[in-house]
Image 1 (cartoon, rainbow, N blue to C red):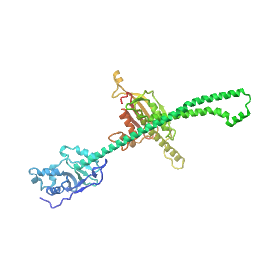
Image 2 (cartoon, rainbow, N blue to C red):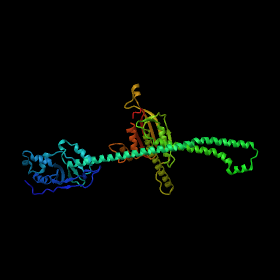
Image 3 (cartoon, rainbow, N blue to C red):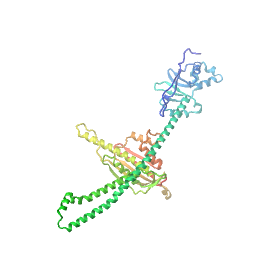
Length: 467
C-alpha cells in the first residue's frame, strides 16, 4: 500500500576545489539522498527516473544509518519475473533484506588514491556499486564509482606531471652542479699553478738568503772595524732583527703556501666528477678533504679523533661518496655548534640570580671517525674453507659525535625519507646519502642516535667492487 509521505528530494554536492595529490573523497561530487527504509519502491523509483545520475539511496531506520541500495540493485530485482508484485508496494526494508551486499563505507577524509585502491579490491560484481561517504556530521552521502575513477586518474596524471617536473628540475640541478664542479676544478687548477711557483721559488730564496748572510758574516770577520756609514745603515734597518726574523718569515710563507695547496687540492677532490664506472679511490683522502673544507664553517673548537684502519683502494664513485661524508659531517658540526651555543647560554643563565634548572655537564665537542675492514657472512656462519672464502668483505666507516642526538620523532622522519613508499616531501641530505650508499654502491647506511648522548652514522661498502 502506497504511503502518503514524500521522500526527501536528493541534491547534488558539487565541489569547486581543484584536485591535488592530497585530495580526499570529501572533495569529489557527492549525492545526498537518505530515506527511511519504510518507504516503498514505487515512491523511490520515480526519483531515479527524475535524476538519472543518482547512483543509489542511503537507508535509515529511526534516523540511523542501516545500509545502502544501489540504483542497479533496485532495478535488477524489479525486473525479475514477479519482482514488481513482490517489491513494488513493499517497504525498502524487504527489498534490502534480499539485495543486501557488502557496502564500501569510507570517511570523507579518505584520500582519493586510497579509496580507489579499496574500490578496486572488491569482487567483480561489486565494482560498479557506489561508495558511501561518511561525514563528520554523521550524514552519509553517495559517491559514484565512475567519479572516483575519473578523479583517481586525474591525480595519477598530476602525480606523473609532478614527477616529470621534479626529474627535469633534478636533471637541471645536476647539470648545474656538474658545471659548477668543472668550474671549481678549473679555478682550483689555476690557483695551484701560482702556488706551485711560490712554493718552488721559496726553497731557492731560502738558499739565496743563507748564502748572502754567510757572505756578510765573512766580510765582518775580514774587517776589524766597520765604517760609520755601514753601522748607521745596520741600525736603521735593524740588521740583527732581520737576521733572526728572515728564516721565520720564509718558513711562515712556506706554511701558508702549503695550506693553500692542501685546501685547493681538497676542494679539487671534493668537486671530482665521477667516471661512468667506479674507480679505486682512497677513502681517507676523501674524509680528510671533507674535514678540511668544514673547518672554515665551524665557529667552535671541535676535536677530530681519527682511528683509521689500513684500507686498500676501494672501487667506488668517489665524488658521490665525498658528498656523503660532507653531508654527515655537516650534520654533526651543526648539531655540535647548536649544542655549544645552548650550553653557553645556559652557563650565562646560571650566573644570574634566577632559579637554576638542571643542566648537563659541559663536554668538549668531538667527532670520532673510525674506518675498518671487516668480514660479514651473508646469511650464516661458514662451515668450511670454501664458505669462508665466499664471505662478504666490507669497508665500514663510522662517524660519531657527542652532540645532542636525534629525537625519536626526527628519527622517524629520517627513516621515512629513506623509504620509497613513505617518501618525505623534500629531498634531505641524509636521504640523498642513503640513496648513494645503498642504490649506487650496493652498501648499507645505518644511524644510531640517543637524545643527549650523540649520534653515530655507519656506512658499509662492499670490498669486492661489485657495484
